[in-house]
Length: 443
Image 1 (cartoon, rainbow, N blue to C red):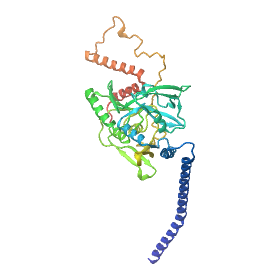
Image 2: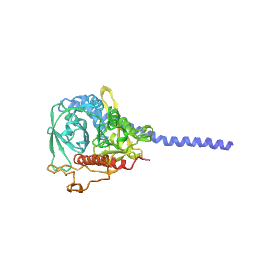
Image 3: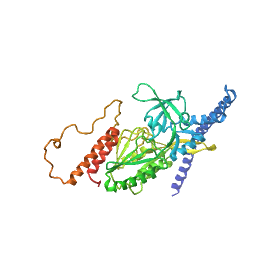
Image 4: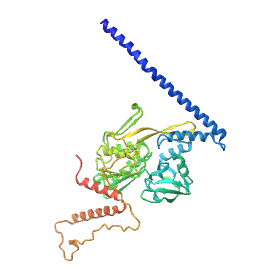
């Protein structure tokens, strides 16, 4: 017993010595790192003072420091930045769903401003701006060298004023200019309508209004359809939706899931990770769902699409989404400014990271590009049928009600066919819901 105690005591002493021997170099390394940081901060101070004293023109010290802070943040990734008091206030206004501007969500790529997506019903949308467009100049002034916030400031202006932007678009050989009249952007987060027997939920953004708009609009549309039994499924249209508030994305996904994880976030420290789970209750009572996405679907849109896809709750169709799978935390700073800092990554329920990869559709459906001068395809058959022949026999096996039902089904099919000319992806989604409803309810 005494020998065991002695061995244990010796072990403790050896362990202490080993820890001390290891900790010594670590403490020295940390001290060296701190010394280097302080030296670099001194260097920053020296440069700042020389600029103030010797630059060819007098400089605004506050703007100089602001630019240095923003440069530090933007060097990290395209989504981290410093928000001046005005920019921070603008961001708060945007999450409430009304602001002034062009109506585009942008990021930065290779020094240029890249359009993530135009927002529905905005001046940019009406002017034909597309996801993936690069904006290289504003009113003839090149944006090369501007930070993203500086470029956005340049594009802001009084409502009713004109802006001329230079656009580079894939597939177009030369840059071209687009004139846009600035306007007050009032976003309706969710628009609900019926196409045949299907309900279409067009979600344009994830702001404070999104979940309220969705639940109210869906309930009203189901009532107008004559009840849930009269609806064959729901289409959630997330195309060109640039994202927004994380909690709203969780609410929307939860609205169609009975249980399970919706999304998780993982930061630098494991203890900072979060998981968001669905509560019981499905607003559609288990109806089939099709989700539409494209390259303009980003962030919160990808969370919803990924969650419904992983739980096999929806079929996702369209084209690969944008791939913004990072979390930005907005931290208030002194002087009413704020810092937008990337603090985590998003992961779908199956553990997929959205970052840079995006959500891959279950079925890839490209939206055909309309070319000027193209003749629209006819949606009716150009061949004559038996019924067109003079003196043909009537069909005596059907009642008048059955004949009327067939004619109504034909009218709906022709309406969907006509929709293909306007929105091929949406028409494809409607056809999928028809096929799923024909198979009957899920077990």
